[in-house]
Length: 264
Image (cartoon, rainbow, N blue to C red; front, side):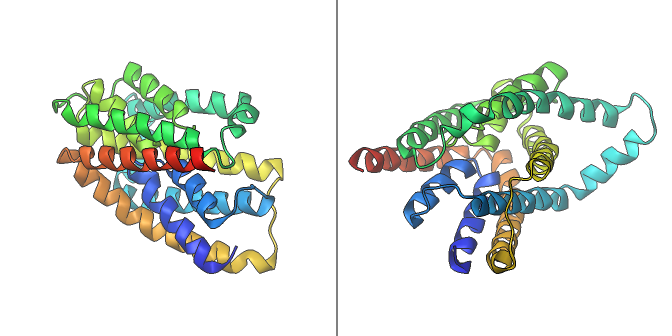
């Protein structure tokens, strides 16, 4: 992989991690276009770097919210911050279970299966369309809603289903305020990404050598910058009910992916 390819994939990851168009699906399509259909150890390391960059971008965007939550937690009281943190933990459980116990089965859906990615993008398009038509409310995220949104996040591990699209759409369809749904969606993924990175590091399956420093750094910077702007932009778009545009985009890309896959 050269630096240009790393920057392209970094921008794709940064944008699609927050915009509801499926980062994993686009990385699969991007890898197919660039001719990198296999997943060597170097690609695993690159994937970890990109995900860390987007997690860091989320932390920077929500730094005030995170600081407020941490201050509340250290009061050691049953306050709003403690309840919110517990909801985050509950939302992580379904994806953690799937990632730990069904990782081998999940890997079968990756590796150039662009017809499957296209079908999942169509599902994402439907979710976004339905969510955009939902009425806005002032309802916060409750404990039951946190679990249901967590299940949506677990399903979104599949390539082609947008994690942010699935979680935000599920939240909105449950009647949750759109701004609160976006905030919860982005904050709930940070500990999950960091946990996944820690697991990959502990497993020892990541390869690094000095020759890869250039493209890893380029990918990290590209993903962080793109992720920062995509995150702030997405919050504003959700508030203004502009998800239909992404629904149309996912529909078009999904149909193209299905058509290209069937012709291969």
